[in-house]
Amino acid sequence: MIPFSPPRIDQSIVDAVNEVLISGWITTGPKTREFESLLKNYTQCKEIICLNSASAGLELALRWFGVGPGDEVILPAYTYAASANVVVHCGAKPVFVDSKLDDFNIDPELILRAITPATKVIMPVDLAGFPCDYNAINEIPNRPEFKKLFNPQNDIQRNLNRILVLADAAHSIGASYYSLMAGALADITVFSFHAVKNLTTAEGGAICLNLPDSFNNESVKQVLAVKSLHGQNKDALAKLVPGNWEYDIVEPGYKYNMTDIQAAIGIVELKRYNSDMLVRRKAIFEKYFELLSKHHLIELPIVKTQIAESSYHVFLLRIKDIVEEQRNAIIQEIFKREVAVNVHFKPLPMMTYYKNAGYNIDNYPVAYNNFSREISLPVYYDLSDEDVLTICKAVIDSVNAVCI
Image (cartoon, rainbow, N blue to C red; front, side):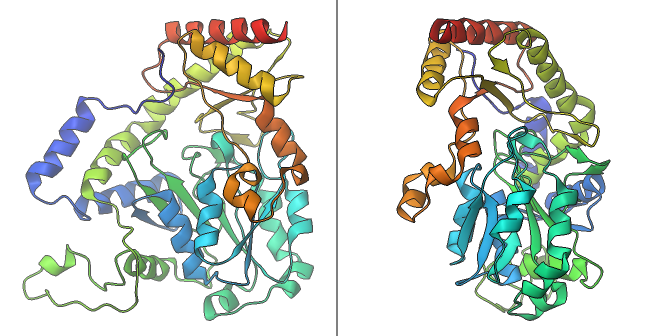
């Protein structure tokens, strides 16, 4: 069986982790700080803090902004559960909007219709690593009618004086939009470094800060650091200074910090990311395009335009003129041919929790249409060209078996 997305673990990563283990310092420390510095330089964001997951980053950003009961957060119906779950954790209401037909991402025109006086945050999601239309999205909160509608409830919201744009860029490190890197495209951006991501730290994430000049982004980072460590005003490394043992708990925070073990993996991956990982993933995408483009029922994903380029994270294949049951049958046929595939994602209004909360997939026809025809193909560093040939044959034979 050709697997779907195993992580890249080679000797360089093993050596980096061993170095940390032998050092005796395995929690948040110098490696985490080094990783943050490298990420800040790579993305060109103003400040960055690494955490134990993207979910932690999204929730921490929402809580820092003061999102809570009575508030609304606009996000796409077509995304992974983490995007909406963190809104629910804060006591706020997820407001789902539909996708665009072409690239799976949130439709900015539909965001306009979803804004109310309760709207505090717009959360675009770069599905599969292709950036959303950030020019259109970032312009929305600055429109006079929406600034007038904005109802700030705390000093941070009054400082911004508009809806916050919080990008869920879990898939898109390395992507670009108008020559800007993902991480510098919104007020706040959150990355994931989960095991299946292009750049992994096993588990992990990061918050990239690009708040306007009315904010001190470095100070905001320090506030987030305290919130990420139980509200403790000194981390373990700071307490190592002789005589500096005493600390205070200034708020009831969370346990969201990244460890040096995780950061060591990330450092190796980031240093070779553009020259190695992205090169290989792009080559795999190009091979898929070459081998699948001639089949009349296969619809290939958008990964590069004049203004944006994907991180080449997930290959979102769609099959034309089929229904969900046929898509499921095609997937079963592909598995019979010993190739693992996946689906990204089942829209959240179809999930039990969100259905029970009153959401109806009939209100998101584009999201459902994309989901019902989508099959995600394997993309990972060690996938060989021969494997890609095998996968493409399995896909074509399976589509033919079900549809022709």
